[in-house]
Length: 63
Image (tube, rainbow, N blue to C red; front, top):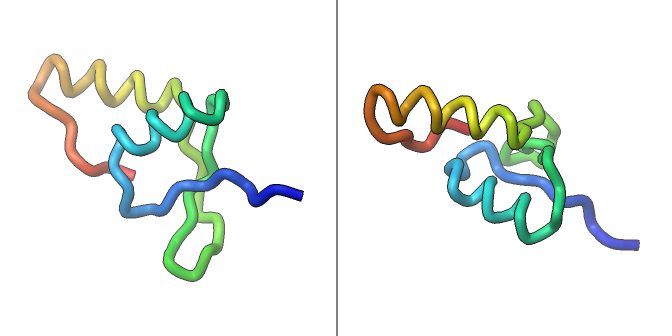
């Protein structure tokens, strides 16, 4: 059995997008330092953030 694909809450959007592409998924559980799920980020969330920041400036670390 394989481990679930998750992303750390301190990761940036580029890392999330790369992990989604690599694993052919459109959503990732976001986990904290204790490995508890604290949310989910989707490809649509990332696209919205990039779209908003392209109008105002560049995105930062916002997971």
